[in-house]
Length: 238
Image (cartoon, rainbow, N blue to C red; front, top):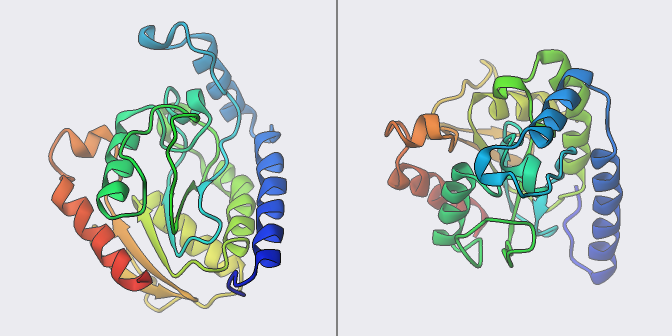
């Protein structure tokens, strides 16, 4: 992968990322997930009853020159599926972008809407599956249909050096994408755990518990734990 060192290279990268975004947002390949994302928009949570839902697949977001990539599982039904921006409009996004802000990768901690002024510097955020799945559990078939979008995204972010996988699903998805791109995986195959790291192809992969309420409300994941992961990631890219 070639780093983005010139204005022309940067412009080409932005253009191809826009093409990828168009391909992602027009996808309807997984009927079960399409029904789920559209049902959430048709029957919104009470607090969002006056909101217009995005209700389409959600593309990645951030700096095309990013050296840090953050990968999650899938959009939340009333978060990114509503706002159209990954990890935006829910408590998970509050935790993630709060940590990125404290680590110096985001200009603000708030992530409430696609037009809220949030900017990322040297970081990009994505997910393995692009639509909100039932019970937040994509099937293996749905993951495999969606993973080509992520492999394309990896090739279009040539400066990435460190990847933070939020949860086991994202960790395994990254390993699958790396193998599909021809990178040999370590043996034994690296297993997910919070704080674990592994060298995968040209990247340093770091694991973190997902920023879901299931983890943050119970104390399984704390702000200091999350900050420690991003401090390690910053060490690899700066």
